[in-house]
Image: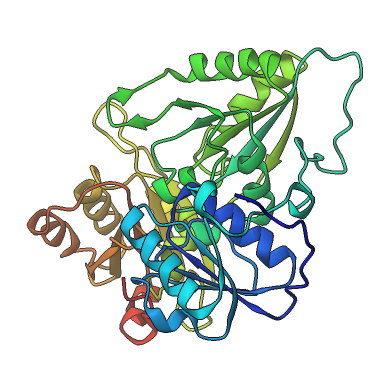
Length: 378
């Protein structure tokens, strides 16, 4: 194969990428960086894409080649790649097969590669000690599950991380956006099932920081809201390991928004409180008296197991049995399901519908707005 080294101006010109092979994401972003109008066919979104990329999760069609200047075939199917190339030949279009350079008639030169760095600069408030013999640990909130709810800073960090310690609530689409060459350590916790005890996780972060330059502790939701993030960075501080914290959208905000339930509303709730429904010795130890205010929205994390006790205790201490209540299962994800009733009726509804974790419980008058404000249709 003989290639003529040339430079192309692709600004505002249509370039087509077909398929979802690993090279496709890189090629799409490279073309987008040259201000091409990129059409990507045959792939679901795996990361945050530039505005000049249009994504179509459907099979390739021959008319996708209309008005194209450059084509990339990056399908997992060799048959489809060859078909795309043959159609390009018939139209006198240049086609690069991502997995077969030998039969491509154009290749991306190294000079066209987008500029990348091997490390990300930490928050401006962070100052690295030149005498410190350890890397930086970033405590990162991954949000409630939808990858589009990641912060930009979180996305940058997971893409360059050398090691990633992640929890059970970090969704698979987000894990796919992480640096594939990183060392991944699962540290998830489910009821009575802890892959690693908390002390072991704390020590692990210290050891990884001594081995790698960029370590990410990736936690579902926000690491400072029932995420034990404070305990983990306390250990890092004690060991004089540099760290930074990247907040995430907590489950209360994400799940409520995706369920059409505003946490506050002038006509229904003037305050909101987050509590945990985690059982200790079979009991939920909450200050029930402060939770009976009808103008208060209660958000209960980890409340599935204790939902019956929570509802009964609130009623016993004076909250109306007719108070609207909703349980949100797998909030913000395509599998999201919302069950709404009252304090008196929610337990039976949960028992009848085989609800599974993760779930979030919202109690208060704002739940009555759901029928009108529900917008998310998984």
